[in-house]
Image (spheres, rainbow, N blue to C red):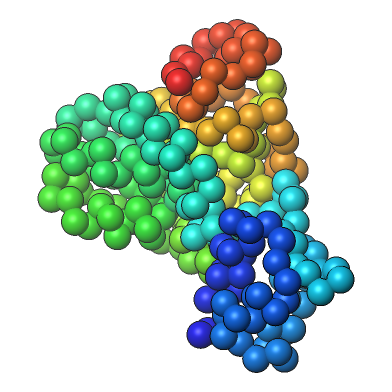
Length: 251
């Protein structure tokens, strides 16, 4: 197994178990003691895990973007529910921006019922699914593929988006408080912001676990979105903030 595959597997397993012994991880990864030790050191240096007393624990940090396969399994049912609600904004003959988030990716199967769509995305997993849908013309940004993320990022990706004007932009985020929308990765935020700027309307998809939190990088405020789609009724303070910005709340 390649190193990146092992690292992603370790994070994926810890995402479900939260805490495991080093011996348990070794049996799962089939790695030698020395190889697993180096992998653990790598993840510790990246501030993704903590090792103590022979156990490894996932870091609960708000400023780390975890790999795609790990994020995909987080609150997966809630993400499907949100995607089902969000797709009602779509109509035939539309051009759509889809970001590379695992929440937005859940929308793709629901797009099969629409005719003559154009989708522009920076997500390789989005593009793979869209490739099997003859009703959709898919455009994929140029740029740098971020290892493990499934995202195409960088200045080239941002500039590529200038070639398009979309009817709707669907994005997710890492967290939301009563004032702003946040990301844990500045490059992800840059791509999402350019999608917003090049679209008539932006629909934000955000599961309830992300509400009431902040991250280190501010994506935008609520005035830049038209609708906020989530899986449960938010608290009254967020409802009030959305209403003051004339944002439609869907849950």
